[in-house]
Image (cartoon, rainbow, N blue to C red; front, side, top):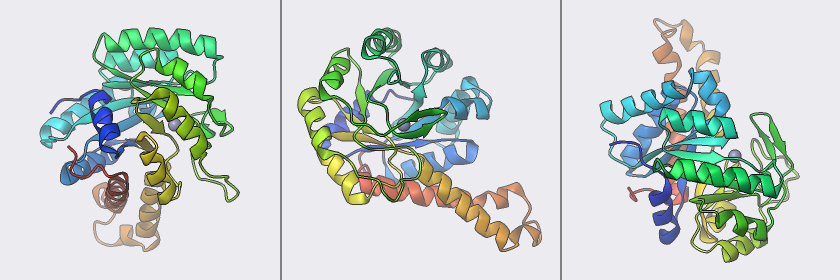
Length: 288
Ligand SMILES: [Zn+2]
């Protein structure tokens, strides 16, 4: 199976009232754990790569070749999109040229006019290569690779303006934030989400910062038009906890327990368990 754009899988998800998970990757173990789980559960999946993660892994070409290699050697048959997460205007073109199949251009920190101008250009160049485009309206709170937002709610009219440019799916702030949610978090604004869906119709909507939103809120958001949920922090926390447990139990000091393949194994299984739980919650199991 080759990489596919995310357009088709998200249109099907919107029509079928479920969501496809975007799981961010950081290395080979992360990627293999997510692909293996998607294949086992027969779920479509989106691999998210932030610019920071692409740099960490060695560059966009490394990422594309690693993912394509896994698709082939692991006989992955479910639809897989490789998606740039929160791309800058420059990052979009690096990812596009390397072979990403889906792109998020995050122009939310520009004024609406400049966001429109740059998004229009990105759509034209991505669609020429069959690559899907996600745009963002209204900054999403928390920190994403140094871009800090305050968790605002997007203006539904601006959402329609951006949607009408021809984007394939739209991220809109509805009170969600990136990272770990604070105890005093006000929750999602379903009123805003509903207003955005009314204006944008069949356009699949994206929920960022999906880690830590209570399950019932995620389910309700899916009924109101969310077709893609981004999960990042939750996999990181699961990986770190499982790895800490291994080290604290002194298992690295027993026999060949220091073998990196053994050290990373509990974290690998923890990512798989987290991805499975999310795919079940989002309703994408068996939809590939
Ligand atoms: Zn995000």
